[in-house]
Amino acid sequence: MFRAAVESVDEWADRTNGLGRHTRRADVLIVAAGKAGLIKAEYVSEGAVVIDVGINPYTAPGGNVRMVGDVDYVSVEPRVRAITPVSGESAR
Image (cartoon, rainbow, N blue to C red; front, side, top):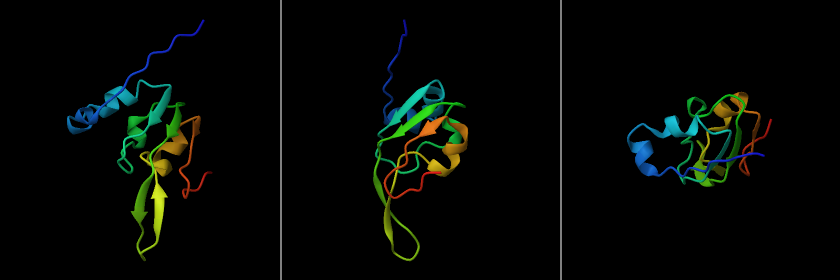
């Protein structure tokens, strides 16, 4: 029998620098914050599964607009077992 605990973290945790304390405990982290690049590598436990639901428009130098997620894919990807890329981000 498996047990799961679900926790929802609001913006207050981000404002008080307590966000990582919550997110590092997750084996499966689902991020839908609406804030581009909010979750960095130091916020994620080694071997976690990360599902990035966020879609945020980002204007790159040169004026091209692309979508990025709430998770900083480049820094988080090496730490985790699996991660979902946001459309427009390259999966490795």
